[in-house]
Length: 199
Length: 82
Image 1 (cartoon, each protein chain N blue to C red):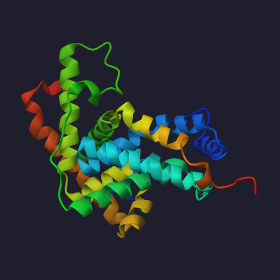
Image 2 (image 1 turned 135 degrees about the vertical axis):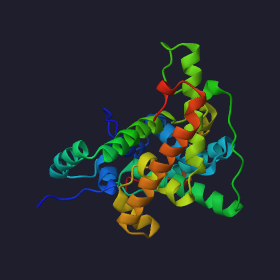
Image 3 (image 1 turned 45 degrees about the horizontal axis):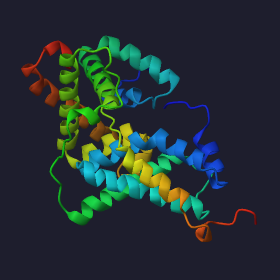
């Protein structure tokens, strides 16, 4: 995990004491991880935006009302809120919205492409788009474990506890998720330069 | 006795959930099992790719959140002076 000069706990403490700048730092620090987690579950950018907002609003309410447990860690806590809201949405609607993709310009704005050619940027964008689609096509239980481990940074034991399975089952699901992604990649890549992609 | 490592152990290793001793043994196991090594290298590459697909929400979303926090009614705020 990335290390920051001021820890999340310190920022939360400052925020509890009324420092809005501290909260802004927390939001800017974690917005992408939280948004990506939600997006990979709901598959719709507009729903993801709404749920991301709801997530932080819930966090603000909890902290401002003095109900936040300062002994815990901020990121896992807020990612759990995001995850639960996304799952609630999914269950409530009992449907999977069709995937909405925006034009490439804003999708990859966290990446630095300044030294790349237009062609390589395009290929990379397509690769990333493919990977998102592949993750979204994984069987539900595999996708769940993959998102929880990779994006929510939960341990396999925590995932096992949260999903009511043994750690071996959680590990097995992750292994199959990786194997499936690897298989999908190898099936889709020949249309482009093989050197750019995974085997 | 030498422990036999499974692909699940490699998954734990990939996500840094193995002990320092297991790490050494898994590295050893990877060098003697080309299929397992191929799985590990592919998984490592996927891990890197998954880090790169992180999306950033539009600034209006974060602006709304920050505004909500700033305008939070003081009557609902917990009194921390007690």
